[in-house]
Length: 273
Image (cartoon, rainbow, N blue to C red; front, side, top):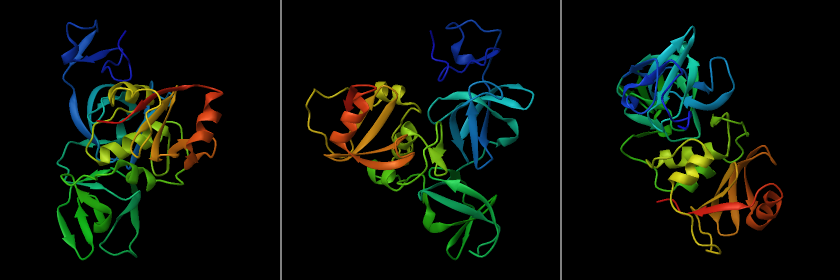
């Protein structure tokens, strides 16, 4: 059976590329849009539970709509779900991404001006001008030091993840306001322009083969348990968004292995390609 998280089929409309692969009442190529809200929950079904979140500027393919709810597939990772249709805007070029954990969109190129919205790491904007230390976007002004051109990715995903230390834990969260274990991995890899699925089980299957047992861990490795994933920050320490501290935090590796083993053994040790 196809995984509904990454299979663009709302139950009524499927993406046209699935013709001949699944049975559906209708097929469509969809409409390419971008998220125009600072952040939006991606829901399992209309008005249902959150599976993930989508960031400002993310490109989405809209396939269906029921009332206020639009069914979309995210271009970045293929994740599918429902979100508030009012959060969608027209497709447009994007040139820069947020490289800071969080920033603000201002009404003027002045740090004392009123902010319009908070933007999180990896949100994308179109820069159309500059004044002083601010960049101009169609929606307002942003601090230049918090942004980088899309063609200048980060190089160390663990350093990106470490910039989110202390962020509150939030199931399905993908932003500086709150995130979960798989989001900490995805946000860091996407900042480095490296593809990454949205959930830990998908990441475990996609990011590389499991290393032989007893391979010494090193910075940048990923450790997987059933329903959980963590970065190795240094050989004896992991970095993860976890329910113990309800935050992004470091934890001694041996302590984590012992503690988590009560619920799940380690399933994979991966060195992402």
